[in-house]
Amino acid sequence: MAKTTLTDELHRYEIGSKLRALRLKKKLGLVDLGRHTGLSPALLSKLERGKMFPTLQTLLRIAMVFSVDLDYFFADHRKKRALAI
Image (cartoon, rainbow, N blue to C red; front, side, top):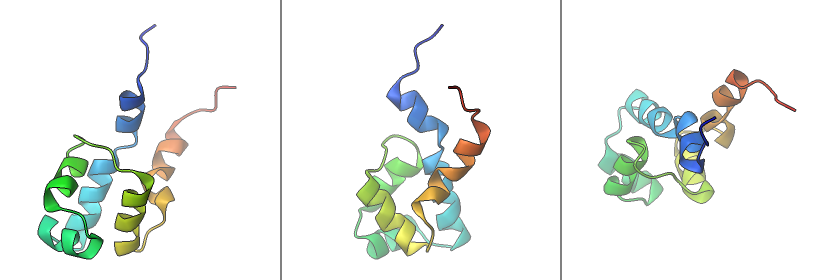
């Protein structure tokens, strides 16, 4: 059985694609989102492309701009997983 890494698990949440979808829905560019969050466009781009994972503080900053809760980034993933106890 292949060992699952922390990075593998984080990729399963698809945070980057959810972030990108939110940004595009609001018709914001990376520079605009950067102004609203105080984060650099380069960092936001890396987050969207899954090259980096946000800290909870960073993710909360982004969530506040879009008026979503943190669970927006995690809720769909939890539904797909069966509880293995």
